Length: 430
Image 1: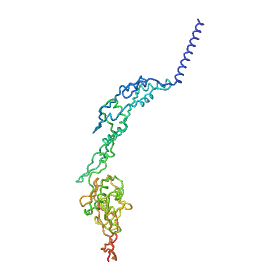
Image 2: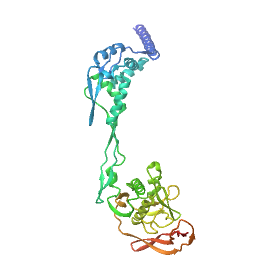
Image 3: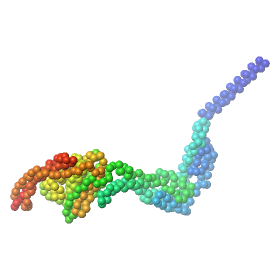
Image 4: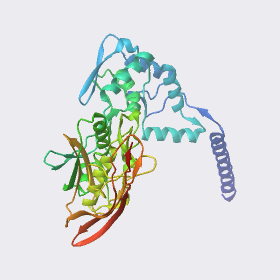
């Protein structure tokens, strides 16, 4: 019995070694051998068509039998607020089978045995959907896109302030814009056409406005703070034109706390190309003509508004001689290339500046949060500088030069704003 037991043990060990060898061979072969599956694994769809278990050629035949892109009818394209008829015959759509073939080949598991098993397991767990792509008549399709974009595209509108004739401030709510979602449209249209959908809903992207009513409501612009006007001759057509252009550029200016205002930066250059015309200006104490004449009345009106609103003046220059529309010491000359009016909003709330020509008056107003005090602007004549009488032509009357001081008074405290000197104008006699 002992001898027989030994023989059985030896035979068993031999069989085990053979089994291990065979298993090692197959495992080694599975790790080394590379190949590609012929049948499409479970979990692969072309659009909504299950093509698993088919070869690539068989899958293409299945798709062809189930996809019918009719060319004898129109399809309605729809989006919120509009629609458009799509002429399928003119579109001349057909399935791009070469591309579909390459995409199906790409999903066939490849590699060694274990790698293919892993790929098939993943596809079974997470389905892969291949979209049907179509070839279109390029010219018609491009025209279709242009037509859709022209009908769908709408810019977003920011929330903004609106001031009525009674100087009441209202916030106009923002509006979203829209545009065609090209990427989604390109990918979805072939699929929906292949399914025979009618109507087809066009994907639209919403454009967010940059400014909302909630934003504006937190800025503290809620009422009239102060206003100031100057008068002009409405018969001087060119000058009135220039006043209106500069006022329009200025109108709607918003200054946040700590923000600086520059008249030249905001209003821009005064050029013929921008609509400005030649009108009288002051140069070295004398009246002459230049493009943009009259714009200094806008800057001077705004300067007085800034003083009354207790804004911090950073830069301001007087004219060479007194002007007719404000008192000496309360004017602000500007020239785009070298003279500017600049001031700073030193208040805690934002400010809205409006400018408007009404009749024979130029109005400038500031809206925000009412100040807890009043600002009074006053001027004091410091002296006159006599003019001289000279020989020359044309004859003209002389005018004394002036020395003027300007002050602001608030909460009982008087502060010097500026001391200005206006040139005398010599009298000319033949």
